[in-house]
Image (cartoon, rainbow, N blue to C red; front, top):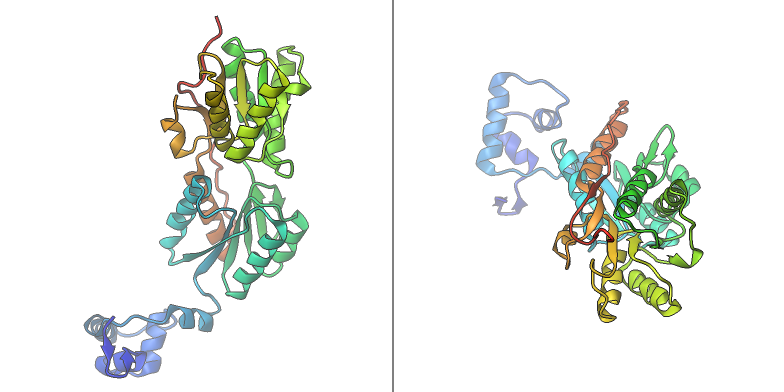
Length: 337
């Protein structure tokens, strides 16, 4: 940025170079007043010549908006959340908004603290990507700032929460395994306090019931949506002597851990055991073998969230069609003979 001898170029210097008053230059930049074509050209020429960069924060505070949207994620290194954040950013940047991102690490108290920090930074809205805060907490925060939450069902004057059809997608994944001849199917659960984990477990159970397959409680093992949880779950299954020909993992990370546990016991995938995951993270097409999984179009989810947020900030009623989940068949599932 070009600077004067005393620092960055100021609005007063732009106004002087354009031959207008500072008030006229300010109103022109804020879009709060019309000026003649001659004055507009003079101001624009002065901005270009001096390479003037307005103080967007100060400008925003004067207008009651910082043009910033807060995003509460759970992990800054997860591909799951990164795809969604890119979608949000692409949806809002054309409207002049930037993101301020914080992580809650799956701890409700930390998540609430981060939302308080975002509101304290005067963000115009807050996006919550899953997490463990209660619906009541989120509704309370929505009295202070518009909120869009992913992974829970909420609706109010200044809040909208939604989730995708995890149940239907889990049923579809189970149908594939049963169609391939599998009957002894293990299930690695997700976190007990997550709605999508409950929906996927329900899809597993209901599809077994639909095909009159007697469920074995010993084939349902605890997980936590992490690689380590999948590893421990399969170790537990193998140590118990349980018989199974396929594993349905509640997410791809759990499937990665499950795959490692099988590899360490010299159990081949899919020759000995088939595996199916949920999410379709980028790395799932590069596992050995490439993972069959349910695709969550997380970039599209983020785009929907960004569009919803802009509508809420602008007090518009925005109806955004939610993206659908789909099954991606690769090489980790085989037909039993």
